[in-house]
Each structure stands twice: as C-alpha cells, then as structure tokens.
Image (tube, rainbow, N blue to C red; front, side):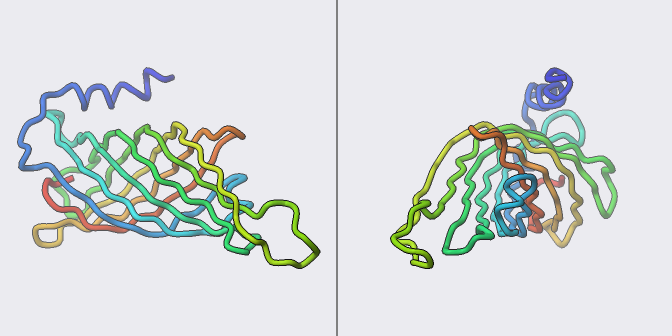
Length: 189
C-alpha cells in the first residue's frame, strides 16, 4: 500500500525539472474544519496556506512544497485553542488539462507542529477565571490528500480546494479539513 501511494510522488520528483519559468506560487486561506476527536473539542477555525508548484516532464504533474498555519478555538472557551503549523512535500495532478476549469488531485506528507493550549484542571474556586493557559507542543508526521479546481483570471489563476490532513499525534491523530480559496501566479496547474 505504501508503494502504491508513493509511486506518483517518486515519478513526479524523479523527472528532471524543466521550464522553471512555469513554476507557480500560490497563496490562500479559508475555513478549517476539525474532524474526529479534534472536532469534538474544537470549533471551526481559519487557516492561511502557501505553496510552490514545480512542473515535471510528466504532463499535468507538479511537485508541491507547501506551508500551512491553522487556528481553531476550543468549545470550552476561556481562550483555549489549537494552532497547527506545518509543511508538506507532495504532488498535484491535473485531471483535465486545456480546459477552462481544471480539476486536480493532491497528496503529500510532511511534519506539523500541533500546539494545544488549555486551562490547568485545578482552579482556586469554582467559577474562577484561569490565571494562565498551558501549552503542549508536539511536532509529528502528517499526511494530506485532497482535490480542487482552478480557473484562469488574466495571468493568474483562482483556485478552490479541500484536503483531509491527519497528523499522527502521541494520543492518536489530529484530523482536519482546510477548505482554501486563493490565487496562483506562474505556471498553469
């Protein structure tokens, strides 16, 4: 199974890079929807994302270098929140090239720092406001899979994409779905 998932990435990455002038830069942001146990403890939040897409000789395939910042607030209030900062290396594959609207698939793997801030369990008396939050950081591997669509607007492209990202944290996993709208400059993807 691992080989099946890594084959497209290896094929894209092993092709010599060409036409570096077609390298793309993307920036965007949107809603972050926590899922699973993370979703039970957190409300929807926001994220910002950026990527560099490097074309390969395989038509429609790009190697992606991506970065993400996400923040969600706890359902319990008092300023409790979760911040995730991460980076992935992956690929995208355009399904229908040469069309006005171009759907694509993405997948990748990388590392994410998950910082959870919470109130210590002991308060001086019931109903007392917490003195300060405690924060636990852990940097762990994560995986992403998703898809989107892009459309040309002048020399740029607008895109809308959704991904499922799971970070393998010490107590299981932290899963979330960032839904991103953004703009891409450079190569057509």
